[in-house]
Length: 256
Image (tube, rainbow, N blue to C red):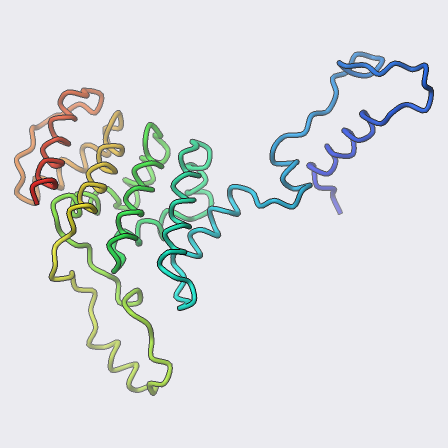
């Protein structure tokens, strides 16, 4: 079996930093006798040695907690997990891990959650992850996230998928469950989006479109499709033009 490279680094570090048996042999601060540099331990190796979870582990655990249907996991617990996730994706490397870990899809699904505080946190995390981050902006566009944010920014609730609404009654018979599933369709909620969620969606949209033309083009097109007057040919690097677009949406959310 191949040795974990982190453990290999630890072994080399231990050998290099062992006190020599000959007291007269002065340790080198820069390397061995041949001048080779000493092995250093990075944060990932130290975390593995100490048994601490990696950032990737914590990100996956956060999403699992937030999306869990376990009734013992409270709303407060989910909000704490979301807060932890938002802080983690402030790091560019961690934001890019969302794609590698397959977490973008569940994160975007949370924009349609039944609870407004979780929708707000989802928009906040999205905005943080895509800020000044072209790879994350690209993933948001590819997964239809920009259209979702436009919908929310304009005050409309995203439809809640059938499987995400409520909990299944385990006591119902198989036929009853089939009948229930047959009549349920993922219709949009009748109530509009809350003011606070709208504002956070505008923030996320602002982060998504700045200096990333594909996201701005999608946002502008979606806004026009919804009857909004949007200037043609806005340059994503023109902060004055982008600010004008975003400030208009922000003011509408504030006045809602």
